[in-house]
Image 1 (cartoon, helix red, strand yellow):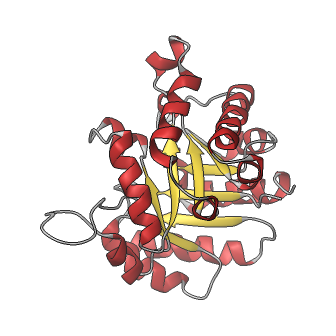
Image 2 (cartoon, rainbow, N blue to C red):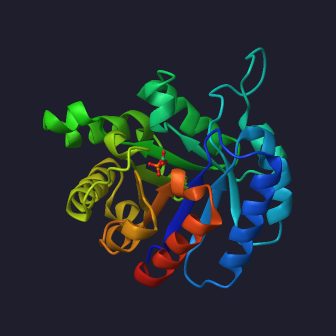
Length: 256
Ligand code: PGA
């Protein structure tokens, strides 16, 4: 039984006031919903205040990135312990913007996954193919390589703290969404890879989120696909008007 999870990745958007206000709206809405989990990922500098606003509620607050190193001379980086210290309990690793804008490799993602877990954080690992890779028929190969590259060597206990987000790069921030069939096929494939790396029980228990232009108008269709266990939302996570209906859609269709 996988409880649906709807996550909002704010990226480098919103200011302090808007962030706290949005977190308040999500928190109150989530209070009235059964059967759905939610995480918000504010920019680092707002995590503490947003986490304080969400303390004692079901709304979880996470970091968008983490340093692969524990402590020391790494200018501009933020450690897992620091994230924990300001109230984050989960961290995104390998978001496509980290991979494609900042050049993060599977090797670096693997270190970040381990560092997050060692810091006591849950981890949401993002994977997904570019348009070029999809057109070349390499979607499965790319997902497999990213999963193996980042998860190999983890224990089944570690995997209880890991969520996967399948986000086709061509669908992120473009308004273009994978069809429920395309997303469903990729999710089923990802689950098969997890079963190969670990075992069927891990594959069955791991939540696999879809990300890429999820919005109120397409959320229910995507979330009703059996292997889609939730959504990682970017643009539509920036307003309560768009994000709350996605939470509602998950609560309605994802109970299984
Ligand atoms: P989008 O972003 O919803 O704006 O496409 C998704 C993401 O980057 O996680």
